[in-house]
Each structure stands twice: as C-alpha cells, then as structure tokens.
Length: 105
Image 1 (cartoon, rainbow, N blue to C red):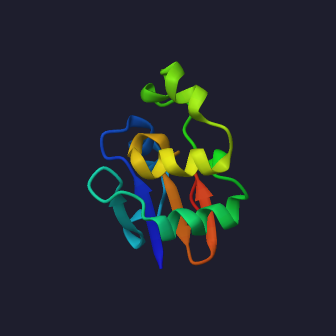
Image 2: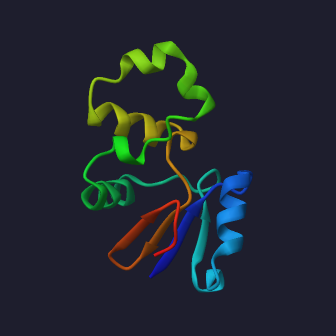
C-alpha cells in the first residue's frame, strides 16, 4: 500500500507532492483531518530509529520554551507528535516497508 501523510495547508508539502510523478498511485492522507495513529507512528519509528528524527523542530508551537524544556527523550517526542499534528515532519511517504520523510520512495 502506498500512502502519503501530508498537510494540505503546507506549501512545502504541496511543492513536494507536485514533483512526484506517480502521486495518483498514493493514498493521500491529510494529517490535520486524520492524525497519525500510534501504530503508524511506531512503524515509522522502527524504520527511522528515533521519534526525534520524525519531529518537526521548525513547528511554530515548538518555539515555546516550555515545550522545549519538557523534552527529555524519545518518549516525549512521541507524546508531542501524537498530541499535535504540526510536530511531525511532512510529507511522509509509505510504500510497503519503505519509508521516506520529505521525499518519495
């Protein structure tokens, strides 16, 4: 199954998706409407090796020093990603067992 987790209001996502030739073969999932599930996030973790590598440190809400000070390790990155869709890097491409963050696989 080929899926893309993206944010429909994100210009970066729009640009990257427009560059993918076979984008019509992917199921497009807007993370604002359908947030990443724990199961999918854990699958991404297994492939990437850490939740931090999936965390969007350029998110506006991450600029809050209180949030930054809460992070002690990977469990905190996981909790924040599940709590707020803006904290995950995007787009995320899933193509079977292959995973690409910010690029198609």
